[in-house]
Length: 410
Image 1 (cartoon, rainbow, N blue to C red):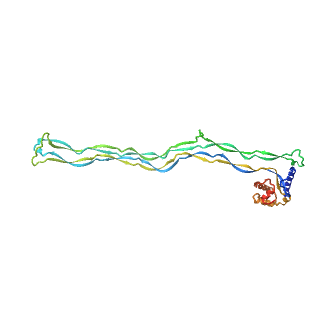
Image 2: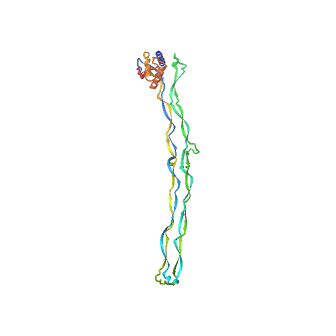
Image 3: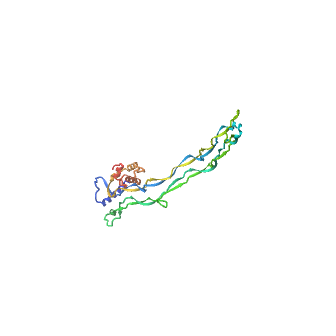
C-alpha cells in the first residue's frame, strides 16, 4: 500500500514537471514537491431570512365579569297605615234649669228646650292592609355587555430568491489537443477556468392582505351580549293600604230650662227657696282622629350574580418577526491551479508508520477502524475529513502539512 501511494505521488509529480517548466518557490534539497489543483474552499453558514416582519396586530380583550354574592328584592318597600282614634277629655257641667224667682212670679218666665251634647259627633278613620300577590320575577344574573371580535389577518406567500452559494470559478479539463508532441497525450490536456454562477434557492415569505370581510381594513366586530335573567319567587303589591274616613255619631240630651221673658225683670226669690240646677258629665274633643304612615323596608333574598368590571375592547400587540434558517456556502479561500505543496519523499514514505497515522486520526475522532497499518479507503476518508475540518487542502494526500497537523512531524 505504501508503494502504491508512492507511485501515485511519483506519477503526479512527473506529469506536473513535464507539463510545467518552473521550480517550486523556496525549494530545499532533500525535500519533494508536487503541484495540485486547489479548489475554492467554502464553509456552510446559517442565515435567518425574514418570513414575516415584525408587525402590530389588534387583539380582542374579552369582557371581564366577576362572580359576586348579591341580593334581589322579594318584597319592595311599602307604606303601612295606622288609624289614630280621637282623644277625649271629660268635664262636669252645671246647668241652671229654674231660677228661684220663678216661684214668686211664674208668668215672667218661659220654658226653653235645649240640646246638650254629651259627646259630639267626630271624624274617625278605618285603614286596610296592603294586598300582595306571589309572582315569578325575572332577576338579572349577568348584565348586558359588549363583546369584541378581531378577524384574523390573511397572508399570501410571496417567493423570494436567496443566494445560497456565491458565484465562483473552477477548472474544467478538456480533451488533449490534437497537435500534442508529448509521448503521453495526457500531458497536453487543456484546463479551462470557468465562472460558476451563484446558486439560488427560493423561499416564501408572508405578506398581509387584510382580513376575511367585505372591507379588508375593517377587521373588528362589536356585539352586544344581552343580559341573562332567571326566575325567582317574589311578592308584588296588588293593592296599597287605604284609609277611609267615617263620622261617628255623638250622644246628646234634651233639657228644658226656664228663662225670663223679654222685657221682664228678675223677681225677688221667696225666702227659703234656691235655684234649680242640673249637673252632667260630658266629653270634650282634645285631639281629632288622624292617620299615621309607617315606612316598611324592602325584603331581600340572596342570589349569585355576575357584575361587569370591564367591557370587551381592543388592544394593539407587537408580534415578533418570524424567520426561516437557510444554509449558505461562504467562500473562505480562493483556490487555484497548480499550487506547489511538499510531499513525502520515497525514503520517508517507506519509513512512514501507518499505524501511527491511524492512531493519530483515531485519537482525534476521525478514524474508527482497526489499527492494522493498512492505508485503506477508510483511512483515506479520515485523512480527507481531517484536512477539510482543519483548513488544509482537502485532497486526501499524506502531505507534510497534514502530518504536522497530526503531530507526526515531517
